[in-house]
Every structure is written in C-alpha cells, then in structure tokens.
Image (cartoon, rainbow, N blue to C red; front, top):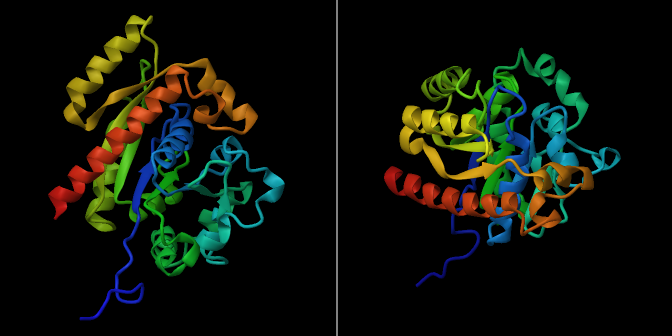
Length: 278
C-alpha cells in the first residue's frame, strides 16, 4: 500500500471571493479587512488581495506604503508572482498582497495582452506551487469601485462574488449593472462564477430609511442577501486610522461581532455551494 505524500496528494485551490461594487463608499474595503480577520480568527488561512489603487485595505491592515516593495501592480504586469508580493499582517493567519498607486496605470500596461483578463487567475493558480501559500483556504479580493479591467480580472479569478450594499437610498442603483457584468463574465470568461451573497452595510436601526432599504433589497434578491447585517458603527470607522481591523481595535463592538457572524455565514454558504457543485 502506497502512503499519500505531498507529491501525490493534489493541492486544494483556495476558495476565491471577489468583493465588488462599482459604487464607492459602501463598506467594501471595510468588509474585506474585517471579514478576512474574522475568518482568520476562526482558524482559516486567508489572503487579502488589494486591487484598489487607493490601497485602503493595505493601509487598514497597518502596512505602510514605504514597505510595499512588490504590489498587485507588479503581479498583474507579470513581474513577480503573487507569493512574492505577500506580506504578513498583525493578524495570525491573515496575509496581504498590497496595492500601490502604480495600479492606476495597469490597464494601459496589459490592455493589448491576450491574457489581460486572466492575469490574476494565473497568479492565484500558481500559488499551489508556492510553499508559503499551500495552506491558504480563502482568498478575498478587494476590487476598485468600478467595473474596470481590474475588476474583470478579479471576477475571472474568483469562484464567487460578495456584494457589500449600503443601506441608503441609492442602494439598488447600479446593482443590476453589476449583476449583468457577473453574467457576462460567467458566459465569456469564468463559467464557475456565482454570487456568494449580498451583505447589507451601514445599517442604522434608528433610521426608517435603512429598514425600508433592507426590506426592498430582500424582496428583490431573496436568499442571496445574508441574514447578517453590518451596523453603522463608529468603532469600525475609527479602526483604519490605527492600522487595525475593527476586530483588533474593539472586539466587543457591534460591528466586530457582526463580522464574526458574517464569517460563519460565509463559510456555511461556501459549504452549500461546494455541495451543490459536487
């Protein structure tokens, strides 16, 4: 009988989730940081890929701009592998591929390349051969607030899309275009892509409008909307200025507790998606 070894057991590709919404200010980066931290806190090995040129996910995790020697710009240009761009964060089990302002020019750099929509997918697939990354279970991609080639790269690489949606008047505006883009990517680039879920953010129970928006979104999207709702919370807003996820800044605050619940719900949905695909 031959014993299984690392050479004979196939590497499991981490589940890749793109956090996308072309509308800015919806809590997308905040969700990437704190969901990644919550997943790491319950034992997952997580990588956050910062694809926003503003680099807020990198700053929010305490990674100084001067220390970002290699970035997602270098990865998309093919100059380094994703594993070479990784930096460890202060959160055990959570690593980061940081962003820099150079990413603003990446679309011009790769626009004429035949594989321009698959650059990130190739980089993530190659992690299976990198000893530093073989225990990863989740990759979270923080997309820019646009439906650009960068976001298309994220959706082409992803297994699923998670959509943060702010509980404000214009919450549903543009959502149909995002869902249409997901369908186009699924049809032309990535047939396995699915909607993992929609998470309502910045919910204020004192505001009647928040409750109405929540009801409208649930009527429109049904069970695609997570049960967990992220409240508007000052501690969540303060945490990035200290270079910390909210869960490290104040574990007991309502926002941190909500992200822990969201992490459990994400894992449950992932298991259901995997079971349905089997």
